[in-house]
Image (cartoon, rainbow, N blue to C red; front, side, top):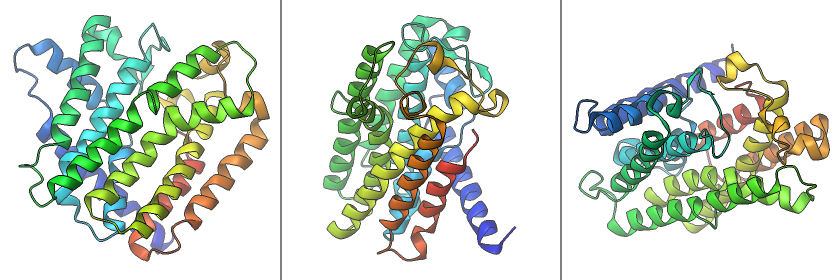
Length: 301
């Protein structure tokens, strides 16, 4: 392994440990009344995962000279948001999945009602943390507000939820390239871009830096979902920790379904290259972002 690979691996390991500690600090206690909802929340948040989204917040902040300690509550909040989306996606009314991260999905353990409420509670907890000025007292209130607004915009009908609705409505129907791109950008890409933009906002990036990081986030966000589509066909269920082949079974709109596997791979690689090129104005402090982008297209889980 090259020296630079070792340093990047060390960065990810340290950043993940940093996020994990914050998660434990900011989750409600399992024995807090009512116990069932807190156990449900903790079950899904602590089930594992790459913690890529909060690490993106941290890496973007550090790329513009920020301090990860000052934004930890916001980064943890992003993981709570992500986990809420997974709990709800797995429900019978949506994807009806039995496995997530190699474990039974939340509703299989706690029932659908508590799973829905656990997702709601994590989303609410996330915005509680994002706007908690006392926990992030070195961040100007205006920056916290702007970052929370950025995240809420990425999650609503002009973002993730809008993309999910069009995704559901497109199942089993012929789809054109424009609608497919809309689904992927809105359903997945906007949240990934928002993580990067929020890290930049919280660390007071200048307009040129913010624009470059926004371009980077848009490119890698779309690439991430294309690779997800590919892995649903060729991935190893043991590595992925979830059912594969579900996109085909549900006749979902995916890049491989429209373009084929090879063209989808080519498209994801092109997006990553263009994304990394967007970071040319940054020095080595942006190397973690560059490596995350490469991981996105090379990942097997």
